[in-house]
Image (tube, rainbow, N blue to C red):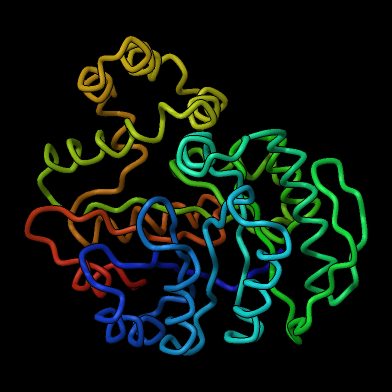
Length: 320
């Protein structure tokens, strides 16, 4: 299956107010970037940076990676996707995912129930709603009674699903247009591709810390990895990928309450596998290694290092 070669960047950019990002965003396509994908956790929401980019970024494909499926209702997700599809005709992909129990339950007071079933049901509802259909249906995890978009998009949004393990990857292949993942190495890509199949676009956020100071890069990487790989879904993902034994000391320290010890227990090998670092040429070659391994769309997340400006890093990390 032949696909357009893609090279993405993560929005919003670290350390810059949204309004100050216009100049670099207008440059992205000329630099060789094809995509801009948002990130959402506890800062800027997933959609506002893309609204701005839709007016600034020319031909870039825009996507959410991801919009959580519990914290926005089905109809609201459909309306927001339709709005983005109107702003970026034929260039918007709605990436959805379960997020984590911390985000859903601890921060938004919503039950984190039946994540696989909820994902499946949302994809089926969104596919129908974005096609302009009137939806009255009782799904397994929610019911919709008589919803129809007032302004269905002329160019329907693509749909992508966050997926870490075989069940969700197969669901993405069956019900969405793409699967979104992160925290994997180039060597992991064939395993993920094997579960998703050849016809499912694979998108992954690649964490890039452009510095030749290896110890600094590893220290930054350990802080990031500790926050992610202690989440049960990510722990299970890396167990499936074969890192279970390497990460067990980290999980044991974390579960015992030793946060500092958990980070220190992550082996250098794991950090080097999952966090791209080195000079700009080395980082760019490492990102391209993901594509060579079968990833369709690498999405660079610039991880700031001392003395490295995010905007300059984006210019230097553009595809050669």
